[in-house]
Image 1: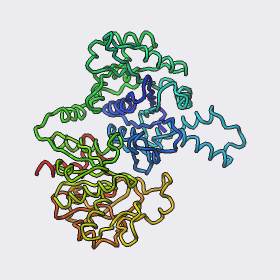
Image 2: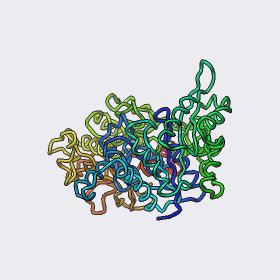
Image 3: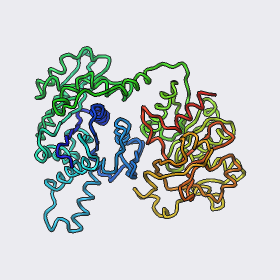
Image 4: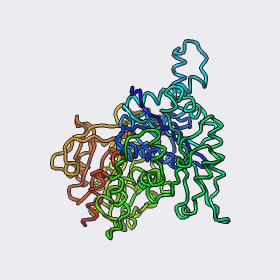
Length: 531
């Protein structure tokens, strides 16, 4: 373990969703731009063991790491901002934490000692910091504490970070508090009292932050010169350690806004490593702010259209591809339960994302059917590949073709449950998860997109294409263009007669980066643009 590793702890206050994850990732991006090795993790207060069984309507997408952990969507932000792959140990929920402790106690690992919040729970939390820093070989390890300071359920994490400087030295720890400063339109002024109260709550735990990040209304921030002075005066921090952050049009502006807002002063007192090279971020923001004439409409056929965070990685991957190609993206949300051919006709291309359950699946099959019959650019992801296969089988004449997930008859189960998965349908963490290799068919569209015949993508699924029905699937217009190395599992399909109809059992959106578009998404945008 690096003995000189630095640790940054990011807390939040006033409101939930204040932007801790984006700010933490932005600080990481700035430090990486200084040439430092940065790693990140999140501590989430909820008692679910992981995000695998959480309702996506409430919590947004379930992000999957390379090693198969089902996690909070903030890990997607970390990976996109740092371009570093996280692991399952990059997130610790209260449920995961207590499960590990209880299992250890039941196994007699505590030798009869009384297991307590302090030192056992807090000690385990602190050990995750040390283990992650060691695993990643970090110069700086950043920890985001989920929830809002003052929440009862997150108190063990706050206590753990309060104690931690005793282990590694206060000079090796930086505390950042992100809070919200509201604009009161009636008196036309910013009110700092909520932020003051939030910081008071943090001080009551024994933590005085080294940096305060104040989220503010972008249109009114010119009227805020007193905010930094007031927060510094009443909250015990240096004035140049109060960073005023306007709301941004794109989250990828935040690293640059943080530099402009003064984040470098407190960071350089903590770890002096030269000026950051923000060229990559400046070029990205230029691409985002460009106003190209060409507009492409991509229909996203989804069932959670009331919470777009459910498909966050997909929409971010589409944006990255549009920026790369140099077109303006218009995402059109198509309700999978109400989708019609008219909806499909009005967009330039269609994406069918992953998902579970029968609700809306016929709309997704209809989307694939329309694209196959009308040469409409199509990208299918996970369930989106399965619905494409079902569509092709039905076109071929197998009218009852369906998935076993949706009670397909045995003589038409073109999608069936994987070997070893039966009986696990309602349990978490038991699917095919994480990175798996695929071999691509030489000369295929997929191989052309990737520029190679061997790829690794992340997965999250329990059902597979039943190769017993390959004849029917091919008759319906699809061919298998990628499989697992042993050929047993179908990983990619495509329609040779269509200009762009590709689908994968994987989730390539997880490997897209804002400044490096994923080839399958870039291919879709180029296909639409070139029409």
